[in-house]
Amino acid sequence: MTMLPTLRIATAAIARNRARSLLTMLGIIIGVAAVIVTVAIGSGARASVADQINGLGSNMLIVLPGSVNQGGVRSGNGAASTLTPADGLAIAQLPHVAAVSPAVSVRAQIVAAGNNWQTTVVGVAPSYTYIRNWPMASGTLFSQTDVAGSAKVAVLGQTVVSNLFGTTNPVGQTVFIRNVPFSVIGTLSAKGQSGVGQDQDDTILIPYTSALERLTGQTTLAAMDVSADDAANISLVQTEATTLLETRHRIASGQPDDFQIRNLADIASAASSTAATMQLLLAGVAAVSLLVGGIGIMNIMLVSVTERTREIGLRVAVGARRAAILWQFLVEAVVLSTAGGAIGAAVGAIGAFAIASLAKWNATVDPVTVMLAVAFSALVGVFFGYYPAAKAARLDPIVALRFE
Image (tube, rainbow, N blue to C red; front, side, top):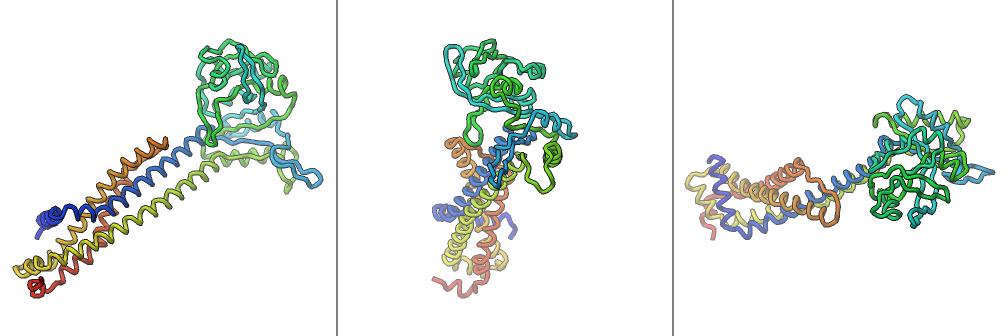
């Protein structure tokens, strides 16, 4: 027999017992659907983490103050207060640095248009929005000339705009920050919450020199944002910046640094690795359902062989070869598992998008994953269907014809 007649006979045998065939496929359907859903949601989670990290900045490093050690007492990170604007200018001269922005952050009560709102005022350089991938919504950003002159100009985040001005365009209005009047020259586009739930739009940007001279009276910075010219050079820039700051701060070899440099690429890699591990774990658990489904197929095929013993004996008696008997039952098992895999893939894709829609979670269904899942389900049919098929092929035709 050729493959086409064998496939026709196998399909007819499955169709004669539709309910049993559907129940047999159920394990495969559930297994494939579970694998598709877990992989899709896992891929979406990894993409979401990557988007959140990329949303923080372009190839970004964050330089922060370190700790202070006095009399054996270590104050913890952030207490050193040794970073200066001159450090930022020096880092900007490194060969693979695209941009640097000093940062001075203060909490303040803002008063404008008869309203008030407490927010975070961040003193930065004009390169800040480039580093942070943060476009303007209206107006303009302050210039390097404004930084040099400690100009009293401000750019508002959308949360501040809505709470102080409502639907009124704030450009050209005046806001009072710690009783110092600042002219609003622009607004930032909405950026939403960060990965830890912080409202990134609840902020005001002003020149960092204005923050130092008019609001804090300090000469040191709270942080510096550094952007590498390419993602491949982030680690190199981190190493070069570390060496440069150690030289500038006269830190001897073996002594702890009075600063710290955080690499967002490392954070992204760790988060992606964690998400990938969880994705593999969930997919592995879901794959157990495929194993259970395969055992179900083997069980039903053994029952089918027993029920059709006289048919097998009759076919062998009239000249059917044992290979044809084996192929007939093996094709039945493969058709059951492949059909179950195809149905499971469809159910999984629909389920993944439904869960993503309800939970507001990204889900990415990769066609390659779908094809691999269906192909694996077919292999399950071959693996678990071979023993019943071989058992059918080994039946003695005389004994089979006498079977009641």
